[in-house]
Length: 136
Length: 413
Image (cartoon, rainbow over all chains, first blue to last red; front, side, top):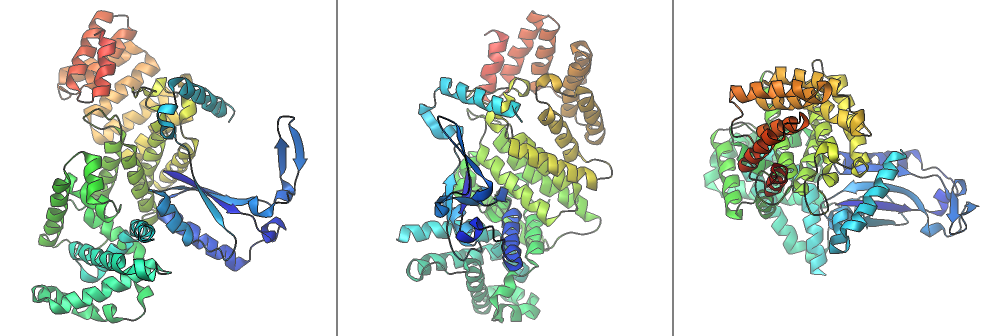
């Protein structure tokens, strides 16, 4: 299964304060462990929300950052391939964070929809994916 | 919350066991004994952690516990006297209080040694697969049994016998060097790819694929690529598996019916895996002098991955790559694939000529894809009656029920 690990923003990350060299080195070491274990598919850090925008539906109103609810914002993510949620949890316990929190979420796969995912819905989903691929 | 702790212990085992067994095997020079010691440490964790909580560094805890048990066992058991003597010089290693030393930089070499040992040619392919999944992939015997549709007792027996064979043959716990290395590496790659293929196309039964095994093989391949970064064929194999796995969810329709490559909805291909596969292929091509068989197969798979529509496929390049692959392998299956590519590049008549040569040759008699391909080409050449005959023949030769259904449909049954 795949999980996304969402790293929540902090006051520091939102203020654009860069991690120290020591912090970066530790994070680099942790990332290397994930890669060595063959489970890290992707992972990135994000700029503060002051450099982001939101789009509000249905009027498609564009709102510039920063956004205020710091703890609900995302500052980075990993995409991991693991055997179980427990394995993801065990890995993330080892992440070199000293404060804040991360949130681990399962990535939907078509089979997760089970019987509810009718052929018609699947077809719709497939069309949607085809369009996404076409846009790349 | 004992249940939570047990789940945490399972997860710790999944993460740590290969390194643990590898480190122990370096000390005791016996993979079987190393696994027993690691299992003992696991039992100790199951006894102690529910009360004490999971330690901050569970890997070091397991290694420390296993080392102490190793010392105890070696001292207590006269049966092991011989081994005691053999490793006499290393006893201090066990007694050393700095337990973290066991998790030092050598761990990469230990893990690589473990992989080479589990995939040793002295073992049958089945034994190598079971041992690798168990020792390196951290799968339980039950999980391996389920994946390969065999009774658990069979897998357990296979693993016990494999460990005995390794001990009896006195297979050294090391990364092979020199002339031996290439052959030993081939053996490792063969095992990883066999695991992948078992997941990708089950040879029998109703289940068209068991993707969990593909994930296990990919994980093994990626680990191997980190441990042996200078080996082009390791990257070639990883590239091949990443690109093939990128199509997993496009390979079956809503009712579970298989969908062939050119009919697949490319929008369902996994872009992340394609991206990873192409990057691995690039590394393999940079490192290689002449491209090896896995890299060539990956390069072929990449031709499909790069094409946004089937019409965009560079079939002439695929033919050239199959030419190179056929020269290395001399395999009639590769020749059959080459015939398909030739048909796509230069028309069905050119392909049929090659297929007919293979039929005359006889080495693929009994292989369902030979009549299946022939039927396909005949259909394209507007010879429907002969085509139907070939599809019926192909259907009678495959054991995969889904595939059989597809072929019978084309045969008009």
